[in-house]
Length: 316
Image (tube, rainbow, N blue to C red; front, side, top):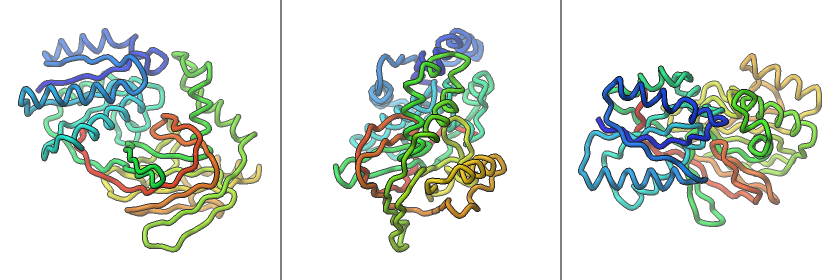
């Protein structure tokens, strides 16, 4: 087996850089055949994934695995690179992706029960013998005729604003306090966030309009925001997506919402709406912040179609 490791050394407040020598030692001890590709700038992992796949095809290598070593953003970019490559170069047996969680959020790892300690996660990768096909999120921007993919979730509004503030927080780059950057951002957004109008067309159901949307996230896994269990039943082995819409709560409703999340009973609340569909249409009025797998999409109007596509992952 040949492993192509795409690593973001700055992931997790430079945690990846700190543990990389130990990762190399474990690889050497296992006599692993691997090649390292280092990310140097945003979206570089997209290019590196395409580069690795081109090299694999040229060598006609049939036993290769791409390892995304970093956080959810590194995994997201690696998936994008693979999808871009195979849109041009059709292949019935695409190279699988493995995830080595050395970032700060690691929600994908939580959702698929990949060990959060890199030593165990790497050992699992090196002893795995076959890939599993999972469903990953796919979206089409109906206004700009573009598309994209996500392993975790696509959020508009509250969670996107949290991601924006967390990514620009001085805590984000701190090795220890980086894990608290999301919580600090959440408190900030709770105080200042204003609701917005959203139109939802869930599958073949009638259109639903929410005039005061607070949180809107389409997810393929249970977690978002660094470990918040927003959709306990979500699964990558299901070809449906889960959409959670929260109408802007009052203070007491917000306290109830947070409390019920920890009990995994928040979906019972009247101001929370859940849809489980193979296909979703979402439209917002005015410019809103968006995020995908913890990566900022900027502020814009969204007019989206969302569904899933299949891709092999090197997981247990």
